[in-house]
Image (tube, rainbow, N blue to C red; front, side, top):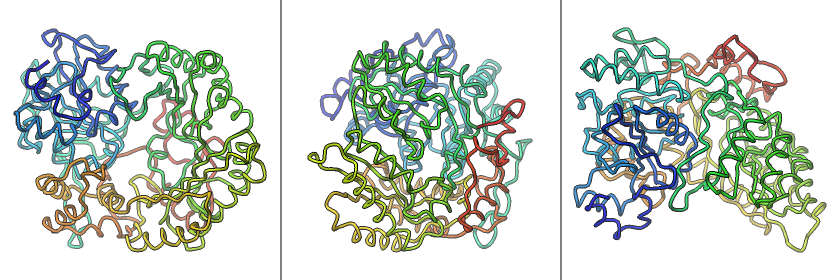
Length: 612
């Protein structure tokens, strides 16, 4: 271990975040590889180590003898202070070497409030923030993850972005980089060639012009760059890499368990849900292979909990078969099996009995809206009676805790819809009184609301976010309606971070100046209340001459050129607009398994096979 690091670690909280040396961490001889890759997660070790996508990419790259992928996380404030004081550059956990000496630095971006951490980590690595100021071929700075479906606010800081799933395309651009390195290409020469790889977006190859009203006039490709960049996806999940051997953390993390990915995509089509659209089409793993992976991962890791992971786990066609197979293994070993993504309309007694064989946790459902009209408008495809019957089933089976998630500020929402949340929560309480097998324990019903954030590539990408004051009024309305119910706890999301999320999720590359100004004046770790400073962000917008309401609260015209117009997720814009129109009629669209609605995602599958 570096002597400077040895000197620093006793001075910081949770030093295990920064030491490396975990079980299953991959250590190679740097002289025997041709490409070194820093896989960076712009948040703490505990958050980054819980990210399944990072574990997958780590394993995919390290399977190759000529590539060494190391992990790197954002240091907490105490560690950053010591690093800057001692002149210790940001380093890879496996080797301890500065990541500025690596060939490629890749950021996983899943949340807009992590953007300032990207800048902070580049600065801690001793690198210029902007791509144009990093003239050498190495290190390349790249990004991937759901935020890259609109990468414009960070476009000037990265050399290129990966759209979609990274298992295959990562190895393709590494091969091209190795060729460029061997043949002494310039960075500009490499970027021209990497833009030809499907799924790669090179922001510097596109010129953006604006109208007088601030909206985008055109996004023009240059130097032969494609007019559209179509996301990459894995065609056959049974042939895709699964990280049976994952790095076992040396300190507690958020999701300290085996994560078993059932399928990618979602059949449901909720109109607010970006993941539901951009991860289409649905592709499943076979139950036999999943059972094999789950058991092997538990054997290797020693974990005592396994999570069946997907956007909607109960939509997996072979769920009961898989649960039976896994529980035959898990139950004798006291390994818990959990389903974090339950739909109330697919929860059943047979599933409940399986889940409680080892240990019983709380149940979580997401009705999203308090009335049937609004649930139909957002295409939740959930009936009130389905939710109540699922709660009755759970309460009669011994559960006494349920969490209900909703959103405030959805398109077409009225006060009646807001008060409908309180009414629905009370109906859940009465379902417990009616069916509980153990009333002596009482019941815990938690209602949580978040503030709706319109996202790119959804049916609501044209919609405004309601003003902060209106959101707070609706929170107060619901809080007052629930305050008499002692068995119901109400939690609501902070509106300030949601406002900024709305700004950056649909923002353009002019916001890069706002990011840099905010970072220069102290912004970092903005997802954490300990660091978040709302006024600093308002000052940043003001200093850069931009209006946050222009991005967050302005309704879009049907034909407006969006900042993310270059990215193609497979779902057509016409389909999304039609879904928006159906919202205002409170008309639902069937799920993909019931009927294909011709969204366009099928074209991404070889042979155009059905995605449900």
